[in-house]
Image (cartoon, rainbow, N blue to C red; front, side, top):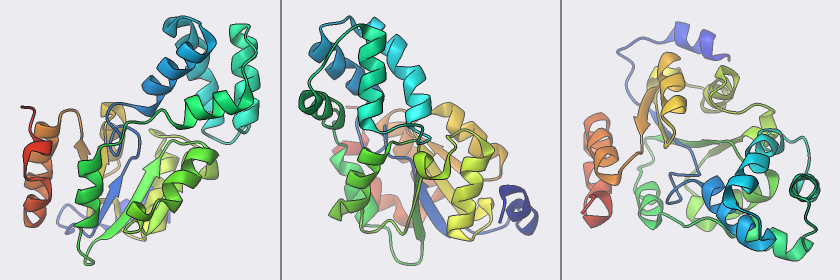
Amino acid sequence: MSAASAAATGSGDVGIKAIAFDWGGVFTVGTFDARAVHALAALTGRPEAAVAEAYYPLMEHFEVGAFDLSGFQTRLDRALGTSTDAVAFRAAFLDAPLERSAMFDVLARIPDRYGVAMLSNNVPELCDRVRTDPRMARVEHFVFSNEIGVRKPDAAAFAALTEALALPPQATVFIDDNAANVAACEALGFRGVLLDTPERFADRWRTLLPDLADAVAGPAWTDA
């Protein structure tokens, strides 16, 4: 079912039946990419700005499955004029995330009456880690960019999420740390929730999901 056809079957009165999450910036503190750039700059000895200039355009292709981690390393080394060790490169890249442990607690507290999914711009090696993490067991549908060949905020990415959940967009809350992705999903009828600061995210969550307000209670969801 496409996003357009799903939207045609729903209305603004559709109740919330599913919760979908981004990964980086939601289950991690800060974006994965920013931390990866920092780690790879330390590994290569190149300035972060130079690494970022080469890294981000390559990630646009890496995240839709154009090449694997070895291919990404080769292309980044070429752009930076470096020759990194494969084991060290893999560790610097894959071990970059700083986890947001409180979000795993939120995930575990979502009751069975809600469907749960993940829509993430991600690369194969990280997808494997995320999908097999026991703490992600509550996620019923994983929709990763490298597997569908398109990245958020493209409407086709959200169409893939709609198809996986078999629900109209209006029935799904989608959580992302990127305002452009939230705006894109809302334009398609989803109920977007931006995670910019813990406190503001918690307020938005409670507004849309008052029955799950306790899931975002406590110091982890304040800015203090």
